[in-house]
Image 1 (cartoon, rainbow, N blue to C red):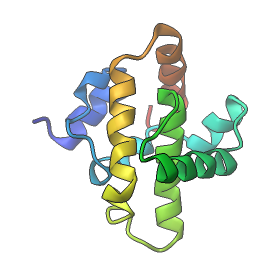
Image 2: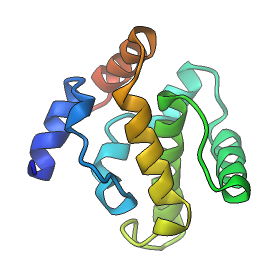
Image 3: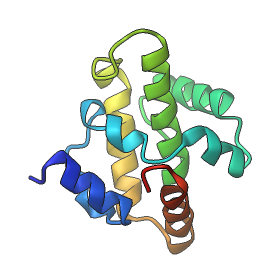
Image 4: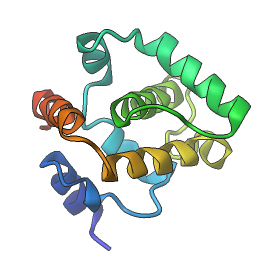
Length: 131
């Protein structure tokens, strides 16, 4: 298993196979913030709070997360912001209730990502302060 900083560095370069499996909420804090979700959502025309709340509500109702890798990454970013702003430690969150499946689905989507979406995510990673 790679150390957290090692797999994060690989992801920043576009190696999404470096994401640990299983990929769970408690492992996703640094990863979620590799992109500036607010700026990225604005850039692609998504109202992040409304979008993320809609996706979370649907996931609670259906038991699964649906969307592109980009959309799910934005949701993960927003869920971490929600946890931080609620005063709840990010590493606690709702975890297994519905956020561990978000992480697992996002990891899966990133393993099979198409060239166009990969390009978008690499641009978003490069545009972040850490990228």
